[in-house]
Image (cartoon, rainbow, N blue to C red; front, top):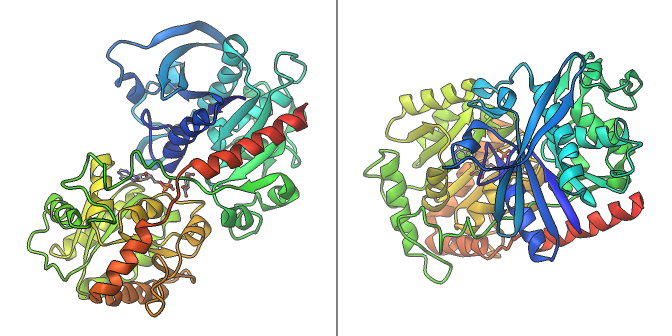
Length: 485
Ligand code: ADP
Ligand code: GLC
């Protein structure tokens, strides 16, 4: 099949979170299964900087009309990587900026225009480059593609055969804008209703995608159920429940060419289940990177790599920072995004300089070093659609401590020291007491060397490669294409 991905992030070009990992890895896996893949991305400043020479111009000028003006957009050839063809939508006024979405974890004021233009430009570009059988669009930033196709372009015979699949990576980010966005983006006012794109008197990109896509997916089975409830649906639970038959949960995979301690180029040493020795060198290297020398071998290291956002559960960590600091444990954290959580970690590290260290930035090399060098990995998420870090941790024998939600619940099984089964520590209630109790359980388990080794090996034996999820996506694409036909 011919499948075109459209998304706002993709490794190795532009990343703020797991979306980029998924859009980077899944197409390559689909190519292995014999499909033809292209990926459309906005041409951000950070992508431009990765090219020594400007990428080749494929289409010099597409006209994207708005209500009172037009913009002219280029389409660039991003090249072929592992069989996947990349295209960049070039509109310097909108995309040649420092951030992807906005400063300090915020939003640029013209994001409706930026991603509205992106969606329409992908459709226009495909009409010249080749209309795919499937548009697989990701999150709100690409969610208007199905809305355009079934409205603005509904009578266009070149596009009528193209089916659409929307993947929701995070239902909390919906892209909501004032009502006049409807006419700014040249949609008829008829679509600004509760059954279509309107939500609490706002124009809602994600809702539009949910309504107009042929099939919907999200990134774990558990989260597919959760978003149909008021607790997790972010007010879209009604419409999601209405489309329950068309909504599938497909757990994300891991790109083991990037995340494998036996081959990872970012590490001080390599290790594998057959020979764990290298992990000690990774731990020493990690502690050094955080300026924490002289940590006893018997003191476990808890690692954190995270977008510092409310979703990630650090408000309950904030309630027990003192208690954690009284335990025999060291915490190393890497994260950035919301200044509130950045400061929370800064203060924690300031109060306990020998036990807690934090680096506030985005740093891929350090993220790998934490996965390898820590003994435990903490993800106390309030909700977690899939989560990738806990799956990376498994591969690195870095035992996850997680809250039982979404993909965390689907991937981590509670350690049972009597039976020697399980892969981590999992608490259910969203509260500081439950979290602390689970951390204490993990610290206690760490003292039993033999048991801990068993637990590490259990973790490392888990296989979350993309092979199976990719096949599930193919079945879904076939179903979507049949419906369209
Ligand atoms: P989310 O997409 O919700 O942020 P995931 O667990 O799916 O959560 O994916 C997060 C991805 O982003 C992982 O690849 C992780 O290593 C990476 N990441 C998050 N924060 C940072 C950071 N500060 N520096 C480097 N990588 C980071
Ligand atoms: C979102 C979710 C995360 C998921 C990622 C990739 O950012 O928060 O749980 O792993 O998308 O699907």
